Image (cartoon, rainbow, N blue to C red; front, side, top):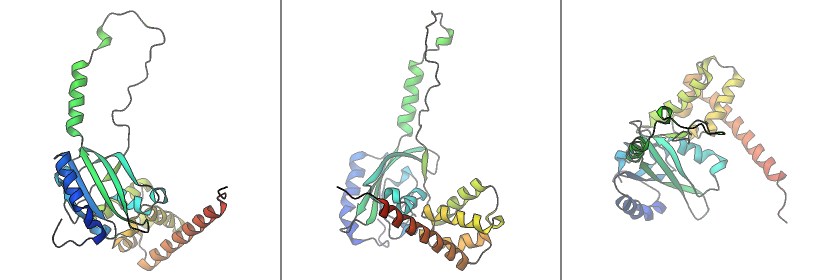
Length: 252
């Protein structure tokens, strides 16, 4: 942890846990501690940072922002064993444990990222050694043979991108939206811009400082217009949440 980097005092109890896990698990495991109150530089501890290429002071990832914003993760203890890629394009198996305060509010993430490139290479080697090319072997045909394609070795979608700097997180999130739309954001109608604002809001994009100014520039609007769009999204979100709560059946 950087001496100049502040963190929530309630997270300090986890410092020896992070260091201890890194020593126990070994150099292929990166163990991180995030203070979610400052997403622009949430990474306050990073042991074995060579796995993702990051260091203390790095921003929250795009998936981390989404988990903070999404209702789907609000009551979970964490998320485990999903795939990501580091800045070298290598596969990483990741898990994130949600750290909560006495009011059940998420105040931190403890993340463990495992570099599976060695294991994947070992698996590929073993498979090549055991491989038999049955197309070149004379054999009796079998009725009802299973000719279905071999399942993907890594069927789980890549869910996270690791950025060293805040600007990378902002740019990556906007690039994903622009690639999906296929046109500059300034060309969109008001209704379409509101849809983009909702998508970015749901991703947790607006938790980042400077995000409103960046979107305003991309859309050709003032930041006050963007703020009004965000307020509309939040009102709709609150209305939906209240409606959902009222429609729940009472527990008998």
